[in-house]
Image 1 (cartoon, helix red, strand yellow):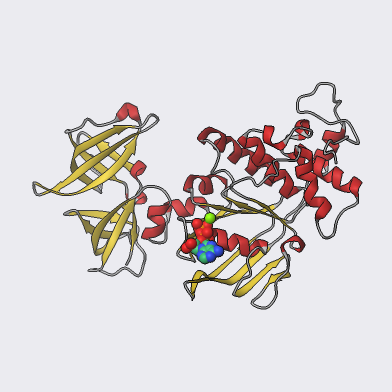
Image 2 (tube, helix red, strand yellow):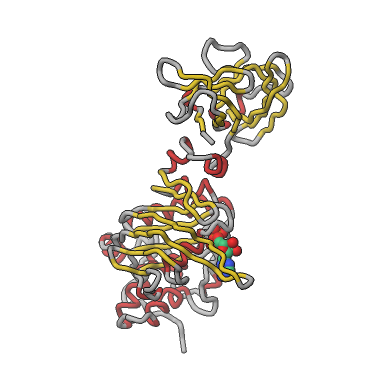
Length: 403
Ligand SMILES: Nc1ncnc2c1ncn2[C@@H]1O[C@H](COP(=O)(O)OP(=O)(O)O)[C@@H](O)[C@H]1O
Ligand SMILES: [Mg+2]
């Protein structure tokens, strides 16, 4: 058997001047919109059998992804992201709950549609390409063995179209192993898209790539997803990946979704300490509510000082709370400005990180140290180690979390 591929039409290579405008590439580009399905996951439960007992790993996970949306599950290793994704793909049988795509039931506690009949494409961390096949054969093979298998010509057309999408059409005849890591991952993506699925599932697809390539692939993946209008469910433990690519992000912890929001909401309005801490760096300082000002902002006592901060309405005077703020929202001054939320401090550590400088400041009250905060700022304007400064926590940068 030969895996060599004879294109049925000229293969359009990127930037090839011999390919006239309006040729096969442009035609394909015009017909690119795959459209996206609406995924509803409702009260999903999954247990694994371990040491003779049942261990719940997905505990009532519920979310909806609107058509064309890029949605991420973000959480630490072991929190149940992959298991959730595999249940949606049909690679795991769920123990409860309901999954539907465009209203069609994919699984319930008693029903299970097999993966190849779900209209989903999946990309894994480890590419999972077939090393003994050519690039083209990798893309076309799943279409030829799938249950509702396509006529040969149609399968070839779709495989080539998918390779064009990820700009690998010029590499069709190469052995798959002759591709770089980034190209292999694009091939895995092409293979998932060749089915023209309604939903694309991606499990840490960029984790094996080096940092620079990862950034490029983030942009490529996101723009391809938007161009195709396909719905995407993305799994990652990397908060910057989730924040930069997603329309919405669900943060998972121990088998549950703890907050679902837009990237900005998650970052600036974390629902609890876990989310605040997991999604970026954060300062958390213990405080006591002392009352409210005329604007309804809370007055809290922290580190021996009075701070003004927005605060949930259920927090009452006398309650113990946590004030949170991001390192980059801290400002420092040599002379204390006449504004609220300015605390005297001494710089105990300064670390140069290239585009930013991180410093640690010890807060003092009545002459003794009461706690430390971490701040980040422009390297041109960093305080010196050992210097006495005043740090400012603008009220709008603070957020109070109740117990
Ligand atoms: N096949 C399996 N059998 C038993 N336990 C499993 C199996 N797969 C995953 N687990 C356990 O389920 C939990 C969630 O795993 P997983 O969904 O892979 O987490 P994540 O993708 O968030 O890192 C982990 O504690 C893991 O050890
Ligand atoms: Mg995983």
